[in-house]
Amino acid sequence: MNKSMKRTVATMMIAGMTVSGAAGAFAGTNMEKISAFLNHSIGFKINGSTYIPKDENGNKLSPITYHDTTYLPVRALSNALNTPIQYDSKTNTIYIGTSTTDQWVLTNYTAAQLDQIVKAFAGFDGFEDAYAPQMMIKGDALQKAEATSDGVNLLFTNMTVNVSPRDYSHDYDGTNVTLSNGATAKWYNVSGKDMLTVKVDDRYVTVSSPNGKLNKSQVEKAAASVTKVGVAQTDLVKVLYTAAQLDELKKAFAGFVGFEAAYAPQMMVKGDVLKKTAATEDGVNIIFENMTVNVSPRDYSSKYEGTKVTLSNGATAKWYTVNGTDMLTLKVDDRYVTLSSPNANLTHARLEKVAVTVAKVGAVQSDLAKVTYTTVQTNAIKDEFAKFDGFETAYAPTLMTKNDAFQKVAGGDSVNFLFKHMNVQISPRDYSVGYDSTAVTLPNGVKAKWFTPSKTAMLSFQIDDRYVTISSADNSLTKAQIEQVATGIARLK
Image (cartoon, rainbow, N blue to C red):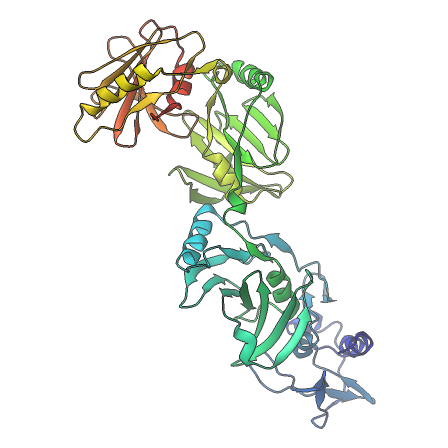
């Protein structure tokens, strides 16, 4: 249908529309009784094809003739004309085309939903990349993602999105349309249900609204937003704090008695940048270009209703909304961390990925040196590990404080690395068992615990199939420094 004809019909629709639910709003005050005729003799042709208007139950609708003017059934024609029609009962306003009630939001898949989507696609050889819509009507929600024999179904409350190597529209007559992103799509009908298929990269995407809540225009907008997800949404890079930024972090936390240790995210979305760190009355704000991370002894989420989620490290967190901004709060050691994206550039999934990397940091990040072993030392380390049956693979510390130095390696019921200022034990045994301990999260996200036998603080954590215990016999290293050294334990090359 050309634009001028569409405008003419739309004008007729405005003149005599019958919108479901609108009559009750006007009854008794703005309704005027008239005498009109149902005109069963008028037929419809759209782009040369016969069209029969029907209501939501499939019953045939006829135009009304009143004083030589024909009034068409607007609700039935809205889909045929690809023009969304909505009625706002609060303002008694009918919207044709763009509506203030037609609000689009980012899909903001949770980490668990993304994992489900990725797993659904993973079983298809040569078709593993996950695709999903990035936009949906406000109020819609992803229910589940499931693999089929030749594709993946993403089931939302109000729409179904199928991604397949197969073009389902091929066997049906239909109408081609151009989407907002310039892609050509095809509308067709299967068993009374309107379907839209569009090719996206090497696959075909078919979108429909089984419950009829979305009109064709809305389905087209959702289809245009389908793109690759997974890798792009977890596109994180390490935050490399400068010495000045670390000093600013440390100073911001220093003013809190019993809360001095500085915490900050170790990862950020690629392209983001740290702007500043500022102390508040009850916490510290770490402000990035696309996110704000607040660390506080206070749980900001306690006063709000929200949704609990389990993060990738097993921690429980809570999503809630304050003044239109989504917030994520979780507990890290003895404090609460709240993340948000004030400019809405980061999805829930990205913020959840960043959240699990929030850990203790400090100036110690810039006073570490790399441990370089000589060939003789490397061979000696490997020999000590070879003495353990089933435990032959050699691991060693790769970081130390700048003023430290490796002395020697010794055996026993563990492999002992003796430095000038610290001892590192790698053993099949967990030495912390039987002692009171304090759990901490290392800067690399690994769970560890502090315990104190014979007045010497020791840090213990598991790496692969062994336990690592680090201490400073002369007490020259702080706990923060030892925790940083712990992140450098790795397989010896």
